[in-house]
Length: 83
Image (cartoon, rainbow, N blue to C red; front, side, top):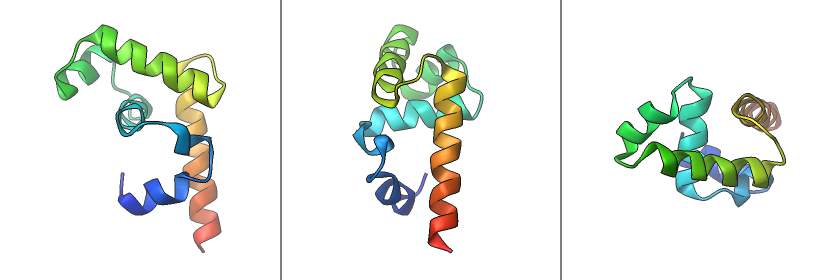
């Protein structure tokens, strides 16, 4: 995810996510499992699960599909606004 995208997300609920939470969410949206994300980030699957708990809370969603959909929606809206 580019820094321009991160800047444009800062005015939304996505802006409340830490850089690590945003990385985890991006990998979830790409279809990665917690175990795969943990391997990629050199942490435990439990740590990934805890990051996701924080993401769900901040975005007011209850599962990974809803969080990924929220990210996709935010990105699409930002692309439309940038035109």
